[in-house]
Length: 484
Picture 1 (cartoon, rainbow, N blue to C red):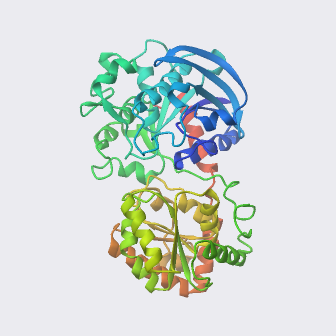
Picture 2: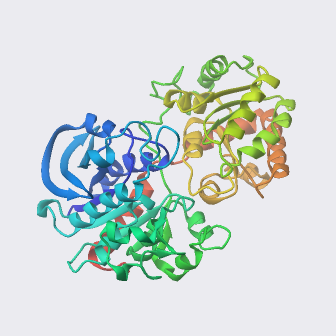
Picture 3: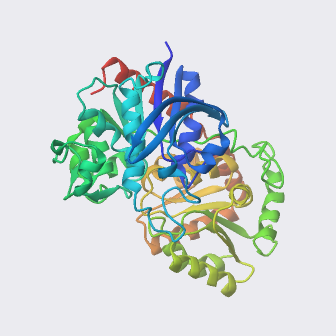
């Protein structure tokens, strides 16, 4: 019997995207079809979402949803089955879905995402009988109140699973909002939504959902520690076996060097030499010296402390001195953005940067770089290194979270066994990163080993096949009452 899942997300590729959550939300439903799981995704009615809908059907109308009327629309867009919360007073705003033009959080974000959560909960309680799911799958803090609305209702409801994509974003708001959110006073308790004197959206989801997952097994272990739990480690330890890690995958149709329309020249594992045309195109696009022998390091990332890019900026002279080049695409902290922009002047022809995000350039960096560098201090899963494996750009990663789970370090034993797919370093420090850069240059000079690693990387299964099977097992256990 086909299992019906309601996924609840604040962004979904290709309609609206600020990070990896959108990629997961957009790709996982298609992968679950093979598991006889049908996913409908509830998303906010942002302008880009509304514009993409094909023949939307009004399935419910709300009289006064946090102040104004709203509608629930059923539609398809870009091959996705969607339920869209059409609430213009909450979502009809230009640009980023979370912040205004000045980069400040929308002041009504708690109400905007509480509305999304409340509608999801009502769907789980039969709001539209033919659309009642078997399981609700909520993602990140924006949907953390789904489980709270279900828990503090007297109506029967379906089971829930909460996936946390990054513990750093938690959604904490003043306790005075409790009545406005429509939650009873008893919800404000340590075993409810209360979190250090605030209402914790993510905390509520982690506490009250039937199951909690995160996006890699290693990150699932890290967030149970004081170092990685960001204040939630005790709660997560108390949930015991209800917490698990399931690796992300990538959409191997979108990320396929053999058919990618965004790169200069297609190639596959049998024709890796064709990558050279992409390397040349990348060097030309970013103003790097066109040199096939230069070792090109690519970075596609938010510019932030979490991503460890301050360490890269600090050790950039060593990268250049070793004969390397850097191709960087990203935006974020002004200090880092200004530092890398300055490096393009100091190291002319060796460092190129585009400040912002460009999907086509992200694909070209994967296809044209020799190495993709991910020196994150913590990384729940990471998608960049999965794309790098697919494209034959060896990932050079910190040994944390999903990076540790997805890249096989090319140490001496791995090289002898022929199983390496990239390089790892630990601890996450400038000295360790510099040591990893030196190892990478040594490997680059050993071209037979390098080519073997490239082919190993490109043969790695980074698809959603195994993760989708794991999610399907979890859903079926929840629907049958076997998962507690």
